[in-house]
Image (cartoon, rainbow, N blue to C red; front, side, top):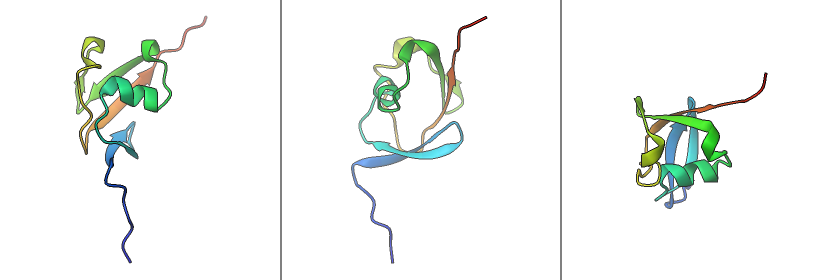
Length: 75
């Protein structure tokens, strides 16, 4: 018995966990999909820091690995 998989979804790793996300997302759209505040995170994609200036143009590919760090203010 095989598991059916939505052909419009891809698998990526986010902070060590596998996630199914829609195919065709940019990194900025991925963050929105994950409901993250865009101005309070830093991203490492496939072991390289991804500058915020490239989030809109960088596409998420199957098997990409992301580390997403949230910045928290306070004192």
